[in-house]
Length: 277
Image (cartoon, rainbow, N blue to C red; front, side):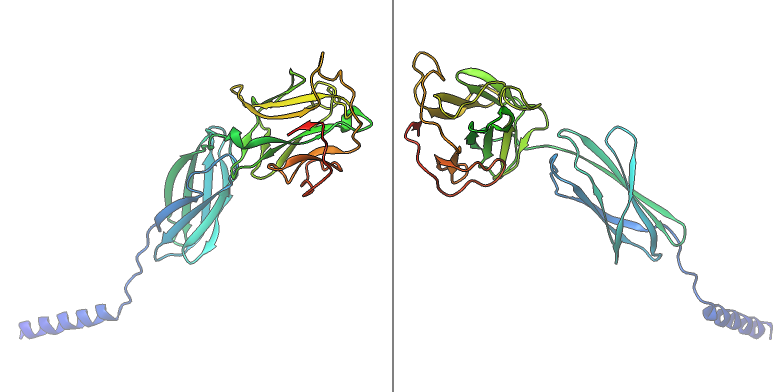
């Protein structure tokens, strides 16, 4: 009789237990993966960080904290369905960026993933840098310019690049001066009339020699009008009203065109027989 009573009590307890709803597991979310795009960032790239998150409790806040050796910066990541993104601004070449993704879920638990990357620029291909347009006919020296063009698919840094005019150094590139792919860079202002202009004079009616060199002193390109004679600039030539422009940009011969400082050159112009091509 006692055995039967015990069995009945055990069955009742099991039935009651089966009627009680299982408690949902509470714990931190799982950060399945963290990735950056681009995978090999350069100093020209903003970096998108993407985190894949799983768990029974939905995230209530996902943050991205990054540091470059100074104080940390925090941005809130956005997204849905388990995918969240945040952006780290472009950083200088060689910078090590440490970053941390933190996920707070609705149960109050926190999950953290930490990673880092180092910014690395491709070496500049100076062989793709050329003289593109030269303008010496402006009424004021501040309006005269020499334009460079980058024919490559990657940026070219101008630090250490030099220009000689009439066989004398007239301009040297500094940190932060860059020519973007298939774009031009104008050096505006003769005789030091502007902060980053070239130091010599530039006339549209005399012989002239302009030479472009990479940071190692290798000659990249030359513009020559007329001959040296006893000295460059000594020979008087027919005055040119416009500028000497490569038509088209980067690859064409120098032609006389209206000046297009910092903009695309015309597809054609007027020939100048005194220019050595």
